[in-house]
Length: 490
Image 1: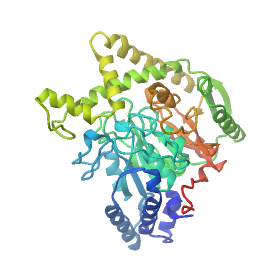
Image 2 (image 1 turned 45 degrees about the vertical axis):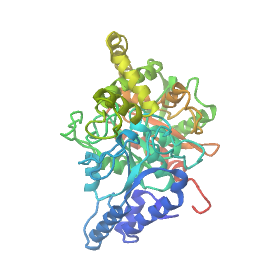
Image 3 (image 1 turned 135 degrees about the horizontal axis):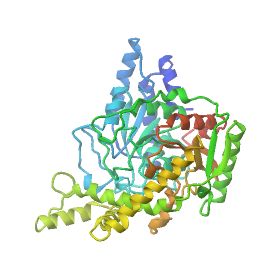
Image 4 (image 1 turned 60 degrees about the vertical axis):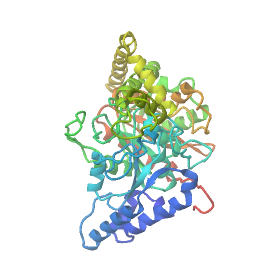
């Protein structure tokens, strides 16, 4: 097995044992990128020279006998909505094609403090609006398990890079399932932490009350390492919660004896693919064999999560994206007649169809005469959805569900039907509306394509979710399987 196919925790042991150098790991990842990137198209930008220098700096530390962090020398990819000082941050949008931030996102600074090797910026749905990475203004990322299928979205580039061995770990953002859904489609681990656990400073905003940064990794152990690196209070983010957080590695034990796990009946209703259902039922059996007490429960307002989300998220997007007017930075038309014409035509040409659809939907929901009828009502329903979860967690340690209703679909299959596309996130949206943590892990395969199992917890229960996920992972072999993109890739 190539170095690029190993996990961060395996590579850390090799680094500290001086069995391998960080530079070798970095070169292995770039060799894989050279072989497979034409098929996967995970990256919008690569930084090989800086990455190699970061790796060599770690090697120098090891040579001096200095202690290194668990992620030191590990090649990591960043979703292209995370600000990186001196490097373009485009959000996969034409309107930000030339934007170079003068500062780093807090999570980027935190990773730099861990001596990680940042290898590049990954593709995404434009401004994180989408479920397939088909909305990127630049390219379509392919699913490493089947290049004819989408990798999911909006963090499709990050998930595909990790699955293909083009990164060891990655960061994504999750507004309605944008980490967990591509993690499920690409057969990797993806976690959306509790809202406020990870700083959003330097994350280009889509929907500020829903957005959350989180990790994508090859296994649960790496997920815990990434959480340790990026979580924590940040005074630069007013929504960052000033609470003491645990060492998530302590949750990595295979013991869920007596765990009470609820299965929301609404997540196993019509629309769930029968083959996916069978995989999840087999996963439930594994959890029961490990001592968990699993029973059906109900989240009665689940049916309202999709319409509620698609009022609140576009409303916030309408407000957040008003700043892209062609004046201060980004795309600007050259042939405008006057200032108003410049605003209108810059936005019209700079934004893609899905972004414009959501901005118009949000502007409508916030407009006079409709604000009370739509936006305020959606906020009330959001409260009901959160209370459903609160009642469930009075009885259960966590909830489980499929991450997605089906495996990855083919390119073009849902592009012309936005509502069908939105249903790809039907099992993940409510978690964001309630501000809860959720993690998707590989649960099996249907016709060679990965299926994700989602664990949902109460606020700040990431350790509980990691413990349950780790127990399941260590009881199966799904996470050990890797896609084979070409005959050259072993």
